[in-house]
Image 1 (cartoon, one colour):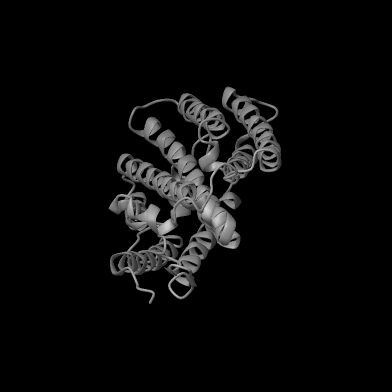
Image 2 (spheres, one colour):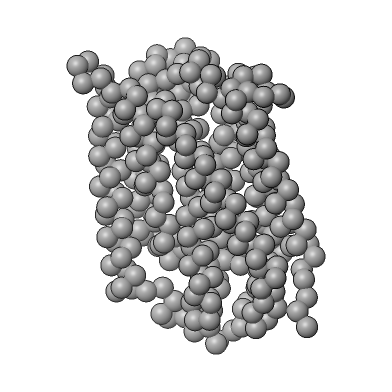
Length: 314
């Protein structure tokens, strides 16, 4: 008879509650309703930078929360669906305890950032944004590890779940991670100008330089040593392109080009090239070098594999 994993079930319920609370606080923070003092947009206008994107780009938050809601809907469906070993969410736990613990931390940092931003505590807000981005990376790590460990079994017996995990969890959280990474760099720009007395130009160059390094290093890693873990994560470059397009439309001045303007155009073009190249490489590898070809799901059952995992990966 199928049994529930009480501790994992508790983690899922807690994650749902944290998500609902986070959405409520974000809805209040947007227009500046109590307990917030100002709208997030007004503060953004007050601390404008040369890499602050146009207002329309922030509509991506609705996409992010739609994906996060879809992640939870998929996870909750596993409480009722069963496979050959028991309930889908825990037999085996492809998304383990560590994933949901990190999710709750992420939502907590999200709420904390709203208050710090509202009170104009920019260095602390930067720290919390970095923590939001970092916990997103950790959630992606847990999901990638789960698919790497149980992927061969999913590929043979549960392909729909395999692709839902890739699309909703991996790519959905990657959108969130990419956007909060970019938001961290914008916040870094603010801190450099307000706390370190750096010029707007130099602060923008620093933030754009960091983004450039991160983008190219990630491209090398995801197409090399990390390929078997992150092959189907494709949402990163579209988010970068979206953000840089917003930066371009708001700040680019064709008649008086600044170094940061040129940097933005060059980085936007590079992101487009990397995106196209990434898509071509993934399609080619999907056809010529499919994952799990050299792994037999019959060698060891997923529950036997799960028994060998540490608690945080169960």
